[in-house]
Image (cartoon, rainbow, N blue to C red; front, side, top):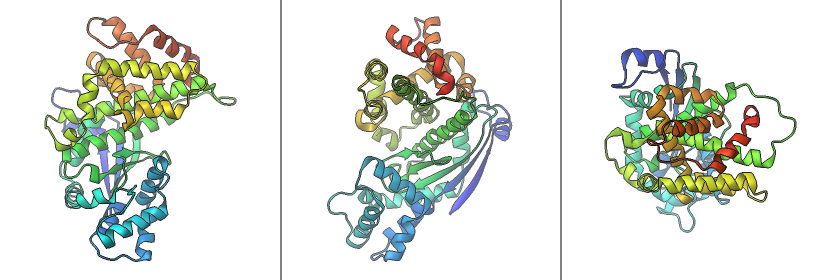
Length: 367
């Protein structure tokens, strides 16, 4: 089942202005295709006592299922299509999965009722479209023309993810349950990554002969993710709903990271220093420390704090404009900001970090 929802920035600005906030500039146009096909098919199988090979093959080949399999395989080498089918059959026919459960079918089965309820609520449209618009449109450039597929899945360990094949983002419903505010937040976060991707494609880049030098490539990767995840975290900030939700409570990393923000900045600076000056440093290891749940996604919150300060002092329109600019501009703007307001911004970069960002400037139109 697929539903096409059209988000028009002009209509939103004219008919649904945000209280106390500037409405999105006319022209932003975002089309969202909601895809529940894989989630519904798997839920249908989980209500059965037996399943055929044909049914398993059909479900495994669905677009959303293939996205899920690729994602699980990326962090767990047992997450293959064969294991997808074998473990799904096991939980359908025995009620559980003995041994490793890389697709987390046991969690899916436990939350089946809540997931079905959430799908019904979103399919009925209601306020969901307007709530997502309210989060995202103020942070979109007026030139944004985005068509995205929101693929709702059940299974796997990732809460939300993109794979980069097309303008698709994926959301794991069993992680949300029946928490509406949590789903709005997560969809806004992941959708904003698609907005960023479209903006990145529109940037004029210089042709690069050969590969970027390793220090430049690794350092710029960290800084790009600092901007993209930090601003998306602000756009989809579930704490701004004003409602203490079970989803937010499960995301205890929110509170931990905000309590240790100074340490988060110091950790990111250490990762960046290693990326630029240590020729043996592996980009994947540095990324995993800052941007995965292994360490509570600490760099998400470093970037979030930077984005929040920019929003406070410069406004949402300035953050929106960064979508079409180099990720380095995000860092330079933050540095400029704390130099202009030294008594108002608590978290500043070291001179070594400022120097690395300056050294990357000649490469900004190539990254």
